[in-house]
Length: 437
Image 1 (cartoon, rainbow, N blue to C red):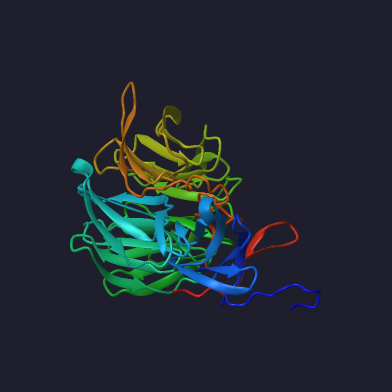
Image 2: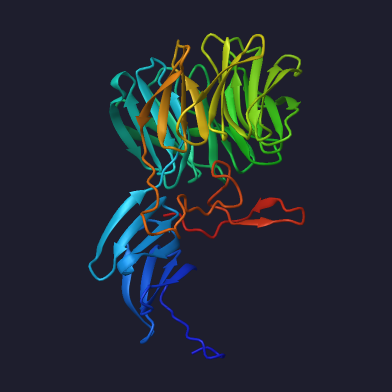
């Protein structure tokens, strides 16, 4: 008993995140960072059942009819339990945050919240395999120029190299101290660049699987990287509101592009390399002259953060995707707005073009990859990649996306770092107490 007559129930081995009474009042259910839910008898103050099934922190619990339970976890799943019978059903909550085409256009890769990289054949939208190995959400994917390698990275701070043909892992590149948000291969395929929450860009020797150097000048999370077509210049975009240009050979800074009033989320070189597009939380897409560093245009129209931007292979079209749920096309030469494409899903996280084509592909929070057909009536062929299920009926207490990332949006929060606010209200990341399984 506690000092004021309260009863202390002990049994969890980590933080207790939520509790709820059963409807008949005979039990209390608690959920914890130890990955379990425990059912406690309110009369005897003892554990009557421990429910194990989640693979990460359990964050929420709600009680439904018949004392059935639903729990939500950082593993992006909700589990429906029938205590006493041991029966449960897992319903995954998923989002897609990145997609990329193989250079020959035959294979499409997409990745998201469930920690997998999924492959599809372009023709027929048939599944081609699932790559597993990440411990946490995957934020970025990229094919090597010859298509023989696929790179992926995410919340586990690792960059992983895969053989997409054999569907097997090749190497794990370690060194970043925070989540990795962007990866890009050099045009010759010899160097891989990665952007991280640790405020650095790292360059990797693809053949030897070792680090070549660290580019450190950004003052906040680095969200995106892109090589120029000749491979000599690297662009990086950051939460510090800047785009930085780097000399790849010497790793020396070349310049800083300023103009965004929010975090920079995406960068993309035009095929000729003389123009660079960037997008950000300020709702704009900006086009830059890479030689002079001057801004050529500011494209407005999105009603929220613009998460992704990409040039078409011919350089005439620019596509941008935002949290407003739209995919917008722009005349990249005259800097004029084009079609606005809207699907049935939520925010658009990633945008790409099929090699040699003009049809954009988008992915987002509805768990689909959408390949758009342009014309008088734009249509999208949706590839149901990862299905996000709503909370089961009768359980309004469980949110659709249980998350530890409440203070930042999911693609930039580092789930491996606890967050605090300074005097200005800014979110800061600190050393991590979280165990990486």
